[in-house]
Length: 305
Image 1 (cartoon, rainbow, N blue to C red):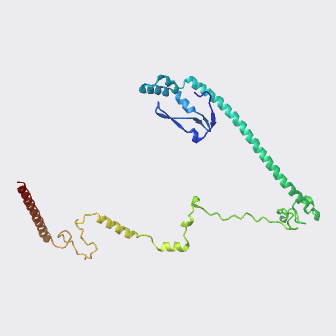
Image 2 (tube, rainbow, N blue to C red):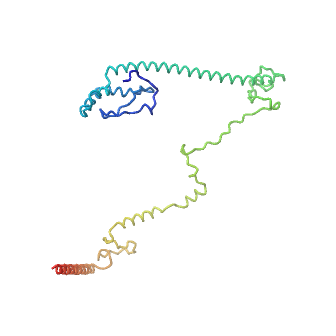
Image 3 (cartoon, rainbow, N blue to C red):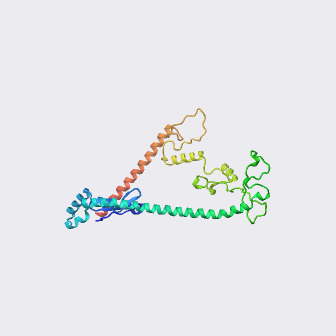
C-alpha cells in the first residue's frame, strides 16, 4: 500500500497508461490526472478501494477457488484510501510551494540576464555618444543646443527645417561622408505548396499551354458514347430479334418494315417454310442420335450376356 502520495507534472506518454484488472475484467487507469498535474497510482488505488472491485474480487476467488489469505493483497481498505487522500492534499501543498520557489528562481535568472544585456548595450553606446559629441557641428559656429538641425537660416516652421537623420560617422570614414539607409531588400513573396500555390513542376509555359489547348487528350465525348453503345450491345445475345437490322441503311419515307423473319430479308411465308425446314432437320438429327444410342446399348448388353 502506498502511504504517501506523489504529485508530478502531467506527461501524456507516461501518465495515460491502463492496467487490466483480472477480477473485474476491465481496464483501469493507472494514474489520476487533473489539468497539468498527476497523482501517481491514484487511479489504481481508487479502483482497488471501490465496492465494485471488492464484489468482483469475491466472485473471482469463489469461481477459481483461490487462497483466501491472498485476497487482501488485491483490496484496499477504505481507511487506507482516506489516509492516501489526505496525503494527496499535503503533497499538493508541497508541490505548489516547490513550484513557487522554482518560478521565483526563474524570474530572478531572467532579470539577471536582462540586466546584463542592458549593461552590455549601454557599454557599447557610451563610446559612440562620446564620438558624436566630439564631432558635433558646434566647432563650425553652430550652437550645440540646435540638435540635429543642419539647415542654416531656415525658420522653425519651414518644412525644409525637418530633422534629417543620417548614420553616425566612424573613424574609417572620410570627413563629410555619411551612410544612407536604403532599406531592406526583400525578394518578392511567392506561394508554395503548403500555401495552396501550384508546384513548379506542374506550371506550364506559354507555348505548352497553347499546345495543350489545341491538342486534346483522349477520345472525344461522341467517341466515348459510341464505345459505350458497342459495349452495351456486345453483352446482348447475338440471336436476338433485330440483331442483324442495319440501322445505317438509307430508306425512303414510304418504307415500311417487312416482318418476314422479323426485320430480316424475306417474306412472311418464307419465314414459315424456313422454320419448318429447320425444325424437320433438328428432329431428323435427334432421331438418328436416339437410334445410335439404342444400338450401342443393345450391343453392350449382348457382350455382357
